[in-house]
Length: 279
Image (cartoon, rainbow, N blue to C red):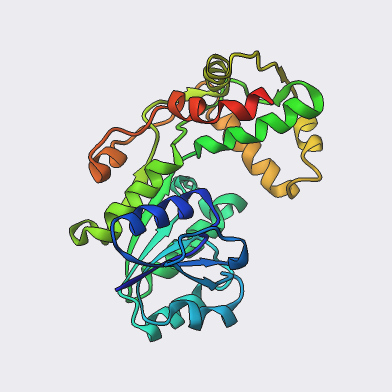
C-alpha cells in the first residue's frame, strides 16, 4: 500500500509526505529532481517529472494511491500508466480557479481544468482538492521590498481567501487515509476573506516593520512582470483581481470538515514567515 507524492519539493507535497510518514504510511517521494530532496533515510525517492512520461513507470510501480499536481501536458499518459500499475485512488491538487465560468479560456485555470476532466474520464477513483489563494503567495512581496522598497498593487482592494499550505496538506492526508471521504471534490479556503491591504497590515504587525505599497495601473504592473510571466497569465491575474476588487471571496468549511479543526488564519501564517519580511 504505497502512496506516491508528486511534487515532493513543494510546500504542500513535502508537508503531506512528512504527515504520512509520521502516521506510518508507506510513502514514495517523487520529484523532477529527487537528488535535491531532504528526507528521512527510510523514505523511498524516485524521479518523476509530470511532463516526461518516461519517468512514470518506475514512479508508479506497486503504488496504490497518488497525490498528483495538476500538470496537464501528459495527464493521459500518466493515467494510462497509473491504470496499468494498479493505482486505485488519485488525489488531485487542483485550484478554485476552475470554478470560474470561463475557466477553459483562462490560461491559469485551463491546465487545472484539463487535469480534472482527464481524471473524471478515467476509471481510477479520484478526489479533487480545489484550494483558493495560497497564503505563501505573499512571499513574492519581500523581493519587491528588497528591490524597490515597496509593493506595486494594481488592485489593493482585491479580496482573496488565503489558505495555509499545511491545511491543504492535512486535507490531503484525510482523503488519502479515510476511504469514506474519497471520490468527492472539496473547495478549500482560508477562514477569512482579506484584501491585499488587509494582508499587508497583518504582515506589518507580525514582522514589526512597515510594508509600503503603491497603487499602480494595470499597464504598469503588467510591464513590470514581463520578465517573470507570459502576457496572457498577467492579463488573467489582472482580470481576476479586478473582478474581486471590493467583492469578498466566498468561504467554505471544507478544511474543518476534513481535518477536524478550523482553517488556520492568515495571522498565523504571517507570524511563521515574519522573518522573510524583516530581512
